[in-house]
Image (cartoon, rainbow, N blue to C red; front, side, top):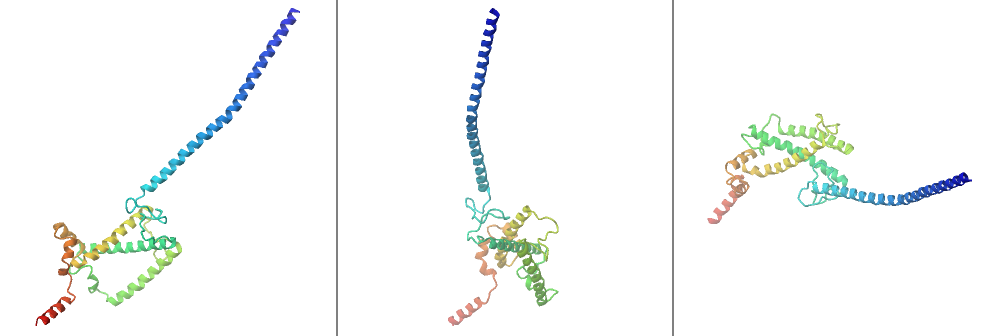
Length: 271
């Protein structure tokens, strides 16, 4: 009997222990189940905060990139149609001429062609003066000189050749939208130098050449070339500059005959 009682007590204690263990496991499972939503909510909040921070950084980076874009004038903003994708785009279009995308392409092509002709012209003017080609004349009057080919055949040949090349260039541009073609080659790049960097350099140098051509044309009334004017300015900056040249313009321009007429009128009135 004593052994039977001991066995029953041990069984009761084992049952209580198993019940306590199962109860603890149940409580731990309930606590874990409650912790999962809390963790998910916390993760959601942290993720939202992180996303907001990342998004904020992205917006800040884009704003900083837009602010760092070089403009033609400090503090101005570019119009919507000038988004910086074109080479040499500094947001300058005060008249809104490029608002139409089709016209914008044509204006870009026209600028490039004028820039290329200006670079050729500036190189020819400076090179000709430096090599002594214009010793007996100036670049303005060089076209009036006599050449081996008479002027009329020369003009006819140039009109045919240039007309053909320009027509092919225009057709190629309308078909492909690419600039600088030669006959049926769009673009013309035999040296393989075409790149975004070279496109930007071409636009910058072309714009500088167009400004230079305006300057060359403006100083032509002095009767000498741009290099001679530059040397005179270096030798005497205060005595030879744009102001003194403008004030002395009446002594450098050829008399168109008005002075002679005025003199004759004055003498007639005096008599």
